[in-house]
Image (cartoon, rainbow, N blue to C red; front, top):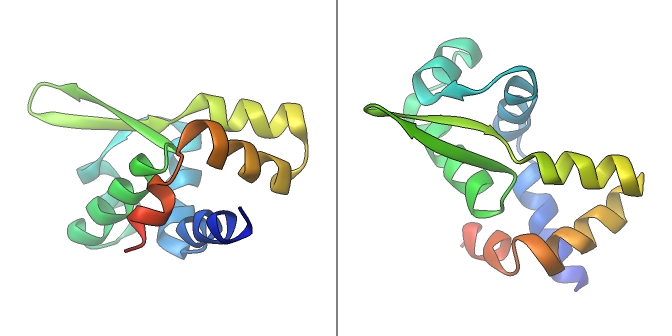
Length: 106
């Protein structure tokens, strides 16, 4: 379990992915909006969103030709209820992403 938690933290241990989560905390956005807001390359934003989505930190919804990304509210709710990041990560690994965080890092 410790190794799985470490891999999940690795997904969050990236500046761009953390900036994306902070931006999505305020409002849902498309890849284009995130790219413009964060002044990052589109491919990097897309790749980061894919990793965050695989780990179930974000979700997407298709609207027309674009996908709109938002935070997976259950993760934030779990953190508020648990108040302990390590407990949250353990719960996240067991019940939400399973082994997908580890797979996302391969």
